[in-house]
Length: 302
Image 1: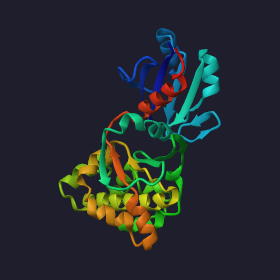
Image 2: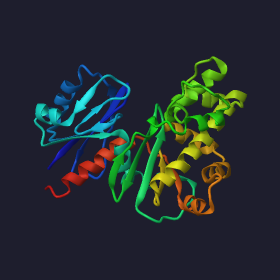
Image 3: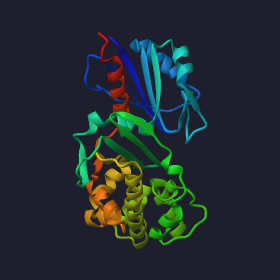
């Protein structure tokens, strides 16, 4: 029997669980502070205590060869080095959105529909506005992580949705993310609030918070429209993360759909009309992506 240690690392905390190839789900998810100085020794104890032979880690950051340098901490992880140091059969690292895309089998029953569609190929787009803007594309279960959040071509156009003009907001995630909501609210009010705080103000009908949240929702729809024509996700777009789970019930579906379709030519509107947009309501999705990969690599093991 193979046993796997599944780890999902955030900027402050990490979550982990133990998996085995004779169980279909994760039995217990643990949460602890992510300490870069103690990380490898922490893993070593878990590996030894639980007789782990496979380690799968999801982490925010671009994956180059077998290494990921974190986007929100000065820390790098190399899977080859960890495999050697911890004496493992296998060690795999995934970009966090790569992991979320792999999780589809486990999250497909916990999805709300923002826009209906009609499938026309086997491509899915996974995207989520959080601290940044993460995305990955899945084609026949082959996953391609992206760095969409750091592209710049849409930034000036999207600023109009917030009625701002600021040269410091350079990349897409400066305008479509939880961090963007906080920054833009501060630009307008000179007050610092988290995206959750701005959302609370929005629910209280605070005029500026309403402008910021509505600007975010429109910017998200327009961004998804461009990405839909870029990747043609015929099996749909899937939005994940706590921010979109919170906002989902406050999104006017007709307005969102109109912004998504935009002023496109009929041929392109017809394509966009076929693409569904969905909100993943399940939490801890990267760990379930790690589990899916663990199951895939151990499916023939006894």
